[in-house]
Image 1 (spheres, rainbow over the protein chains, first blue to last red):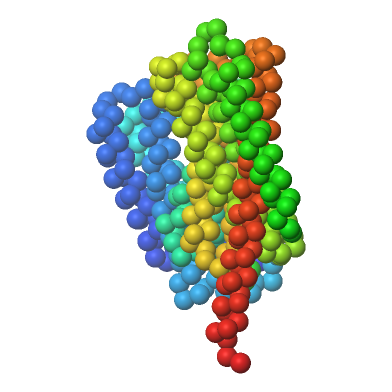
Image 2 (cartoon, each protein chain N blue to C red; image 1 turned 135 degrees about the horizontal axis):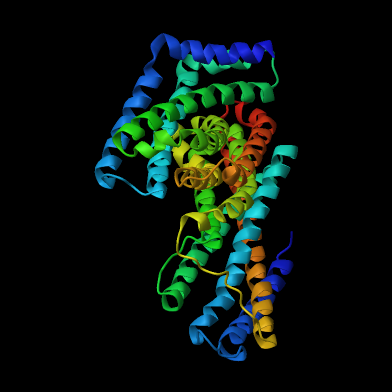
Length: 220
Length: 226
């Protein structure tokens, strides 16, 4: 448990020192929102707001996940991580947790920027929006952790990550879109329970798959 | 592994395909609502069935490969995916050809179509993984992991796509097709025929894959210093 916490803290510390990931992901998110805001115009319908939200998150978070993978490979740093006295399953959980923090950070930036640039309703309804959004992000981050490790071991490296990640995380994205749209249309917590239950199940399945399969991906 | 079982299988397959074509175009009656364009269904449905079966085959072989490490399983997994993607592509094409005259659109976002599209993307991802992987043991394992993840994902996509109905105002009721007995027969023969086509081709491709691996191993052996 302490080793896992140390592994998560390592990633957080590395990011705190340089802040390069958060800065670049935030800028990318802003730019994507600018283009979409220009295209959408004022007062978009709830499905459009939800779509803009998730498109931007997928864009920026995929870049971030790819970058964290690349960082592990710089100077073969990952070999050091593999020496840690933990099972590969715990290693996966630690990496997934760090990636989740990163994804949540991106989501916060996107929600803030989108409320200002595109649709104020997003900020007003954020309490109900947050639950399907965060759970969808968790599924995205967890699958991104497993698939990122897989993609970076190939010749194409991180270029392959979006090709693998979007189809696999699509259930989470679709259901999260549904929940966020419902929340924006004025639904209460009770009404989004359906999507929330599905997202929790998806997250559990992905985490179980990751814990089981991570060793086949990382071990030489 | 002699030649005669293949020969028999190929002849039976050929005969069944002719029977299936006869069933689809001659034996089955003309559908009341859609007319003759409905006959594409006798090809479209068996192709969709094989597309799923092929992916299940690939995932199963991937599990066995991770469990045993034997190259034959890996070759089977790759072969199943290679042929499966062909079937999946044809499913999407025949589906669009069918949809256009009947629904006046090439595509809709209903659960079956979305699931099949994602299945196609997962096939494509798996093949890209294998292409970028080369002959490395670890990278073959990675491809196997993706086959398993993808296989778990497809039913989840199916379930999630039902949430799309809440998003899209265009409602398509499920394509329930009441089948007359002759139609059911034509469909049944088609299912068996196409499954046999898949079985014959995937077996050939698997054997080819194993031979490719043997050749690569031999080439390595020769280049190693004595």
